[in-house]
Image 1 (spheres, rainbow, N blue to C red):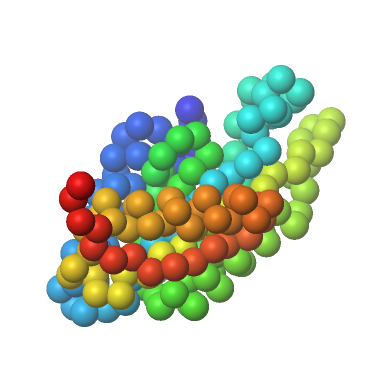
Image 2: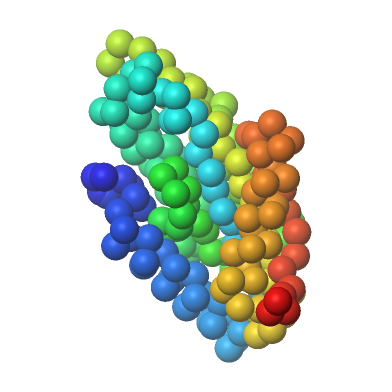
Length: 173
């Protein structure tokens, strides 16, 4: 795909997003700073390809990316994460602070319709927000699993919301 598309949706950007999250986690541990991590899931694009076409959906994703990037704080990092329409933010913030940022992102995406040439598209955004209580004791897979659980809770609550929690080190099975 093209570049937020350009910046967030390429496989190369996905690797950079994971690398950046790992770097942020290491930095939080080194300096004993809070770290929160959010998985964002953009909804509304799945059935839209058939209805509006691929170009319109890419335009929608680009607009969603612009809204995310203009809503986060200047020192937050945003990167590509999982499947199409997903991104992550690493925030030097406590859980309440990170949830407030995530709620602003959700509002920026879901409360304003996206205008295309001849049509209007709606999109939804769900966020799973996790705080690493002790960043040194939590690994990136721990953060990802906990954020994914929180994201599932936000989706089940009908989307357009953020759900939060705390990450702890998970034991290997």
